[in-house]
Image 1 (cartoon, one colour):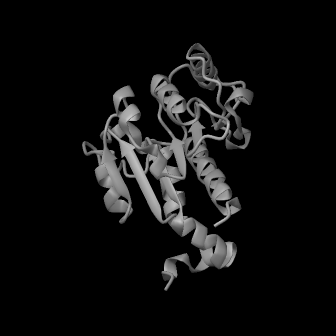
Image 2 (cartoon, rainbow, N blue to C red):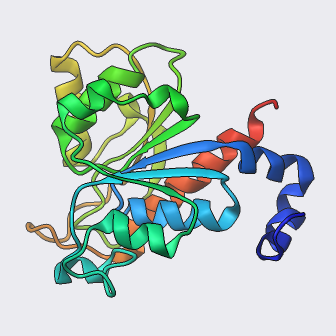
Image 3 (tube, rainbow, N blue to C red):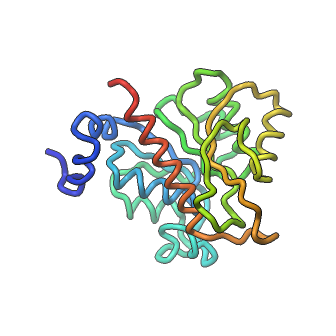
Length: 224
């Protein structure tokens, strides 16, 4: 029996599509301004197996863009979000090189990278996206700060991203590590509106929602 909260989702995706969503396994790395909205969308849509990994605590400066920040100041993000979204798996861990090397990513269909640390993003890509047909599928977020226009957001290969300093540094570091794989990223070529890490939830949330929508699209296209 499908829960009533999914009744309108079922109208859109039909039974076959919704079954794919229920059986999918998605991992979200980093649940800040981008990752928390990806989580919210995937949870509401009916992804049956969701896991989040983060090490940080909420603080007041997170309240302009992160789900859970109002009620969770001073507390671990994964603790607050696991209460907010019952049934998800929440892992309190720092996404270091050692953790990434030892973690079993093959347990998931899709890995969403909403990490804001470039070395960790590179370690992750080297671990699971080094071949053309790597598994699981990796999707990464690039720089969402300093921007105001969500209509500029795009999705493309990491090698075809442009106009964003964070994405450029990401590509440069991948090249230094002789990375030869490929994966998609969400990025925006919009010119920065400030020098500091100012942020607007209209953009950061849209990055997360784009990651989520691309994830759902991939899941629906797969054969059961």
